[in-house]
Length: 328
Image (cartoon, rainbow, N blue to C red):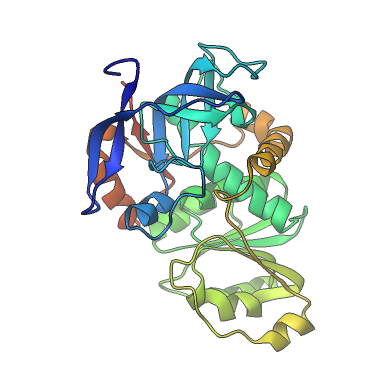
């Protein structure tokens, strides 16, 4: 950092360009800590916010970046159990593309000594998103069948692992044979290339339908998703990559007693995020510590190459997460 009041951060200018610029260090509330960010990661929400299509929630940092790993260097006066020098990772509402970020202490997760910052930064957003949607929103149960669209994405790779670990039947979709193979290696019982096969026909014919669908597509998949759901099935929308408007057959929803659930993580309250983090840690943190489940990292870029990192994600060629190193 350049002085005690300034830091470097990525700023989106009026032409939607990303600039590594000097900005004020964020204030630290009494229940927060300031963390020196070592690594962050790229999410599609960052690309949308850059384009002006996904503004941060009220009170959140306008700086891009929804997760990080780093070292605490200042502790608010009401914070207990954390101290300067602690290595942590955390979900963020914004602010990850910066040298320093303010974080509610209740959102921090202690970072194991054996992990490096790039590895740790690839965990919070995708694993917490997969967890809250599969297990809290959809109430996925052991032995149920779940369809995970975009299985090779960051959230997809996390969701496959969590569902497999819970002894669910996992069917993933992806757009290339390389991605299909990767999903199978993660434990998906079946993986479907949506560019070559109609996933709804395959799922219906070979598996008799699904109990839960985790969807990132939106409009284009709505009819097929409803068709493949079994009685009391749950469809969770976490993105709308193919659009946000489509016709729906309400009769099918009624007759099969389906639940259609829209879900975002970023806009939830601090208290709800704390609850999600704590329940995730109770259920799955030991598996992460034992590397029975793990983050999948596609590439690591220095912050100076953030444009290249955004373009790689935009091209949809990734398997897992793109990580950004803020500090060497």
